[in-house]
Image (tube, rainbow, N blue to C red):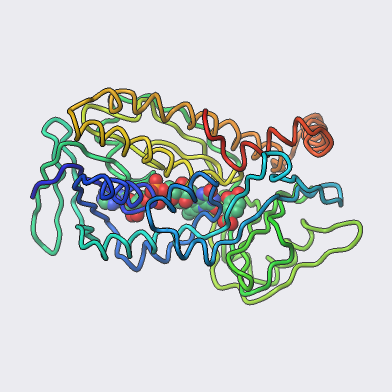
Length: 387
Ligand code: FAD
Ligand code: DHB
């Protein structure tokens, strides 16, 4: 089997790349370890920056996103029993974010790929990459396949095999946090029009949504937290405690139909390429979710990769491919910093040092009282056009 670009992984990075290449007349084969059903049901991120929405719109895969996505013009920061709105539109010349589940983005991209009758193989196994030839080998439907390609795109997430295949040539930068997020989906009406990020002495909490009748909420918990210790009543009680307002507040409750604990880390490898293997998305970097950036960063990487591959395919010009890593890493590190900033400002480490607690409160007060500080948060949250 032969193609121009062998894409390993059908998450947002692999599927957006495949679509951008299709529109540029470049052939690709996408291989995915999991089933179609599994990747379409996997609950993860929910916030799209304007530039991600623009990318999906230009790629012709955003009809449902525009119909069902919820456009938000601000967020609330809640602490000390008070809510404070950060007005994105006023602070960033009218920019907004769109709340639309990652698995919905994935469903739309898979539907488009299949409608174009282009290769997308689910449930492959024994995947390995040879970066010298280059080629990708795997088993599909019981048969061993060798996919010869000009370039390999490693879009196989944090636990994939592509990064490991070139590990000897990479430097790792990493930070692991002492807390995790317990995330739920519930059949309940959102309790606020916008997302609420709460810093409370019992820990961080986030109120988000998926539709006018489904909410997504998160609680800061320990990374070793046992989900069985969290029956629904305890989750609602804890969420209500952390979102409490002096003026009174209670969440709209409903049936919880999905629960999971996600560990948090910051992780970057440099460079994001070796020979003809290019890493994109979580395969190359992880951000803690507080800045809502994981999926957006994956899309930003593959926009750069698609443009570089277009020049390479058209004229053999390798300059874009050579600078791929450098071009991506500027945004990756800006977003790492923003995600670290949001995480540090909003979470309460166990046994928090009283000095650090005062610094955290001073930072929150500053962001909510200084227009310059609020603008900095807003422009990073909605996504910087240029980095
Ligand atoms: P992925 O979505 O991980 O896609 C990689 C794909 O490669 C997967 O489908 C995987 O099955 C496949 N794969 C792996 N190995 C192989 C192989 N050997 N061969 C073929 N295919 C392979 N971000 C936020 O902003 N907010 C959140 O709330 C949030 N929650 C998250 C919850 C969890 C549990 C996780 C893991 C991530 C979360 N993120 C969140 C991060 C965000 O979802 C990711 O940044 C985003 O999925 C990155 O997309 P990707 O395509 O790079 O990787
Ligand atoms: C969601 C996830 C995030 O990590 C975040 O910062 C905001 C919203 C969500 O899943 O809706």
